[in-house]
Image (cartoon, rainbow, N blue to C red):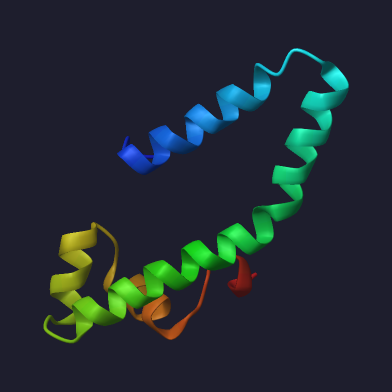
Length: 89
C-alpha cells in the first residue's frame, strides 16, 4: 500500500464518497466517469512528478534526488526523461 499522505487520503475519501452513493445506478455512473478520467489523471500526475524531479535536478545530483525521493538513481533519470513504468513494458 502506498505511504500515507494528505493527497492519498483525499483520493481515498473521494473513493469512499463514491462507494457511499445510495442508488446503485448513480453510483455506477459516477464511478464509471471517474474510471474514464483515470488515464488523463495519471498523465497529469506523471507530468507534475516529472516537473518536480526536473526542478530538484536543477540544484541536486541524481543520487541526491534519488535519496530524497527514496527511489533509485536510474528511476530518477527515467522520471526526468518522461519514462513511466507503463511505457517501459
